[in-house]
Image (cartoon, rainbow, N blue to C red):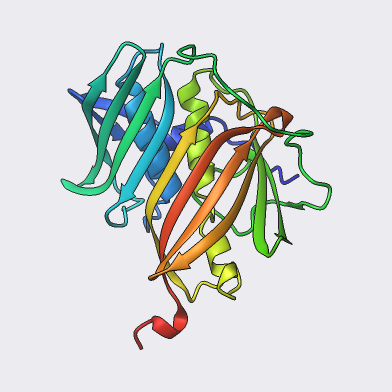
Amino acid sequence: MNRLNRRPDVHDVFAVAAIGERTWQSCHTDARGGRMFGGQTLAQLLTAGYQSVGDHLVASSLSVTFLRPGDGGAVCEYRVGHAHDGQSSAVRDVTACQDGVPVALAAIGFRRPDACAWSHRHGVGDATPDPRARPGLPHPARAIPAGAFDVCYLDTREDGFFVRRLWFRALGQLPAHPAIHHGIVALISDLYLFEPALVENGYAADDRRIRYATTQHSMWFHDLVTTDQWLLIESRSPVSAGGRGLVTAQVRGPGNTVVATAVQEVAIRLPSESPA
């Protein structure tokens, strides 16, 4: 596995601090600037939502619309609206702003973890890495702290689909609160998630001539997770049309059962469509 010098507290990347009534601010910026990593925005939106509900609730869903690229070198403000507060659930609408301009909108659902015992599970084996997996990430990702994770991946073709499997686990001790672990899953879920859509259109996954932007990213958290044990993100792209590609992903945990699901829509401009 790929293990670099340990940098503690990976959750600092998506930590937020209260700055006013129902308003939070990001605690981490990248001095190098550039485009803000979408996974960081997802995790910070989710964390701001978590800050506004009681400890008796856990996240059940996260639906984010990206309006424009965020600046990774600038502070982001998160304004939280209380759309619903029930006995066993809550909904928060969160707006991410920079310099007063919205960059992303989120609707976040919360539930009581003991609200219903009804469930079914399918899984065989576990989520530990395939022996064929390659160590490290498919490409460098500066938004992910070096040494924060064991990570490896495997690209295959199955039943005509390009399938990417990415295994990860956090290194070191983490707080037990679900907000931390769900935040990490949201952060990692966006790592090159769009690439299956490129491969299905005949391009290399790392072809950076292609311009892209995530327009929507939705997640459902089916269970509590612990990110210091192996988790697997398995993704594929079932369709692309109208300049948009769709990628679906399952996050698998112990027993290889699905603990979260992600769906991402990405706007793609291929090289032949780029202006001269």
